[in-house]
Length: 215
Image 1 (spheres, rainbow, N blue to C red):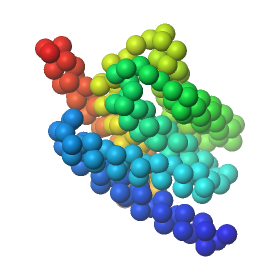
Image 2 (cartoon, rainbow, N blue to C red; image 1 turned 180 degrees about the horizontal axis):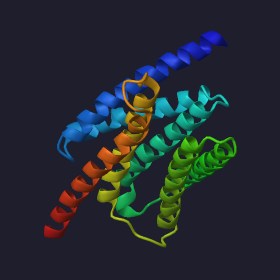
Image 3 (cartoon, rainbow, N blue to C red; image 1 turned 120 degrees about the vertical axis):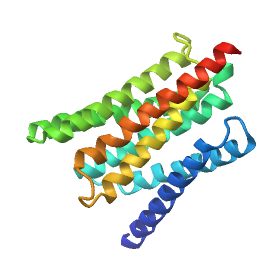
Image 4 (spheres, rainbow, N blue to C red; image 1 turned 90 degrees about the vertical axis):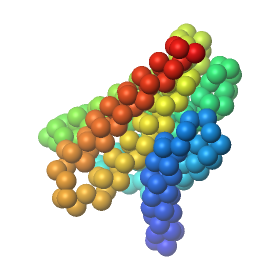
């Protein structure tokens, strides 16, 4: 069992590093180009391995619980980002989309519940982190469920940018938290990627929104 967990850990690290490098390359290549699609697919499968290995390594420890939920949330963003390109423009949502959304809802509920437990233990920091990420997961998954059911309509291109960007932000956050070793203030490692990445995503969304309006 120990050898198996070691192999899983190595695979988790390799796939995580691959996602960090390849994800950046995909973001820097022109949208819609063959290279963008190629690097995007590699990033997708790397993130899939990250999520699976994170679940296999799950332990009832506060940090690992959070990182496992983040891995699920990251891959859900990656999954929906890809699905938006494949079926989003046609609104041809399938069973796999519903299943992924409901799994993310459960993950969000787990994060919020764990945050409440942390608060009862007097750990306000984890209460805030679990609460924010859990609520964010719920909002995204529930908005997707409303989209699948035809109750709201979201522009697939802008959502693709947000989902892939959000996935990469969560991956960078997990990397910094695990490898920080007091090089950065803890709050910076946890919150920094989201703040910086969120501003970049907003800028890119505005750019492509203007292009769509002109078109």
